[in-house]
Image 1 (cartoon, rainbow, N blue to C red):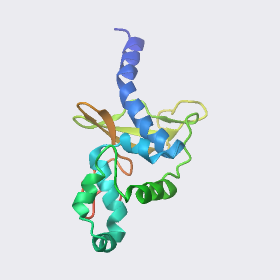
Image 2 (cartoon, rainbow, N blue to C red):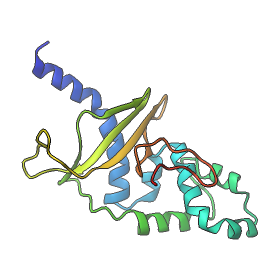
Image 3 (cartoon, rainbow, N blue to C red):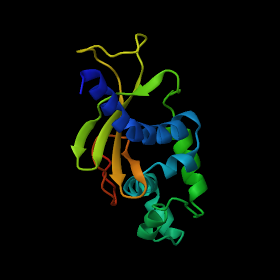
Length: 176
C-alpha cells in the first residue's frame, strides 16, 4: 500500500472518533444544548459531572431529602428525568460552555493518542491560519478523552483533563 493510501485509511478509521468528539463539542460549545451534549457523554463522566456540581450543596441536597448516590445514578441515564436536571443543565451551559468554539475555525488534531484499550485522547484546537500545525509548533488545545463501548460507540469520558474520571464524593476529574 502506498503512503498516501495508508494516510487515507488512517483518517477514515479515525472518522467515528472525530465525529463522536464533535457531537459533544458542537452541542456544548457551539449550540449550548445540554441535552444533546449529555447524549454524547459516557455515564462515568455524567456521574462525576453531577457530583462535582453538587459538592458545594451537599447539605442542602440532603436536607431536601435527596439520596446523593441515587441522584448521581439518575443523572447517568441518557434521558435524565429529574427535578434537578434543569438547574444543573442551565448552570453548566452558563458557567462552563464559555469556550469560543465554532465549526469553521476549530478542529481536532489528527492521530489521537492511545490511552488504554478503548480509550483515546483527542485534542480540540483552533486551526492555524495555514491549516496545518507545523512540527515543533506550540498550540493551545482542549483534551477530549473518549471511550468506546459496544453499542453506543465512542462517547466523551472527560474534557476537563486527559485523566479517566472516578465518581465519588468528591469525584476525581483530574483537573487539579
